[in-house]
Length: 154
Image (cartoon, rainbow, N blue to C red; front, side, top):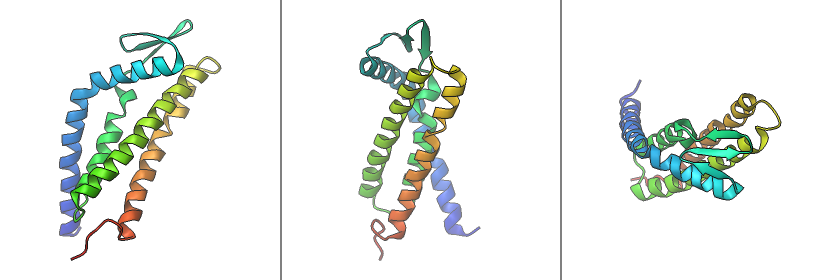
């Protein structure tokens, strides 16, 4: 492995752990915001991090926040060498917005379809969607880099 690849991997890991630590610290607040947002969007009642759907209760827990996915995404973007910070920040805001909207839509679909079919099946199938979205965002970042739209060559 070349020195440049090793540096990139090291940078990725450092940024990943920094962002993951920050997001884990904020996770309770993120769960609260998700619960309130989803309850308002779906006109449902909630208590703490639980949304009341008819006779069922859907808990908004730690994995629902996408903290891990967001930290991986941010580590990937900020770990990329030779890219000006303004592009990293711009793309991070764009990517985090897409991840957040996708996550909210994912949870709405889970809530809406969990009464029709087994909750666990619905949850597992619909939850799979967040990973392809994150992969697409990473692919798009590589595409922008290869198109030389972002990297400022010397």
